[in-house]
Length: 238
Image (cartoon, rainbow, N blue to C red):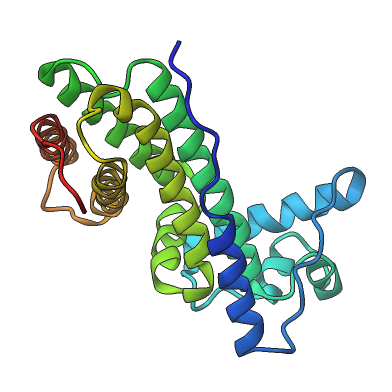
């Protein structure tokens, strides 16, 4: 069985993002701790679920804490016991969505991923793109969460953490397949590929002029070509 790296390369970035946020807004409150059991956890989960449902129905701009509370017949103090504002609810939704994708990606890698012959590689990548897009489509407010991750600076650290985790997992395997490629260059190329995959999620749910089967297949060919390029890379200095 192939080992997948659990290294989190984004801790410092996350801290920098949060430090910058506090510097720009010195009075910003730290996020309240998540409850772990009992009625508090039940209420917390209801709030998050309601936020996802409303996000899908009305979009981010019209999402409010009052609307979230009304959905579950709770009072505003119940909301502010766990969240300072709607951005923190969106942060929770984003973390959950991206964790589901990362977990599914790890399973995909364990099963062989895209490391075989070109024909197998294209089929495997096509399967992954479909899986990732399905996760977004099935998550309440999923496409709005993806949009917010790109649009809102205070959520950038979450997106970067997830994409770097994807890249780290791929690099763990790719270093064995392409030892001739300088490690930094390998990471850079795979990081670009990971970002490309992120865009596929949005295209699958928004571009109705591009059939999903065609999208996933063509995206798989493009990433497979990137991997072929890695195999031809000679020792170079960056």
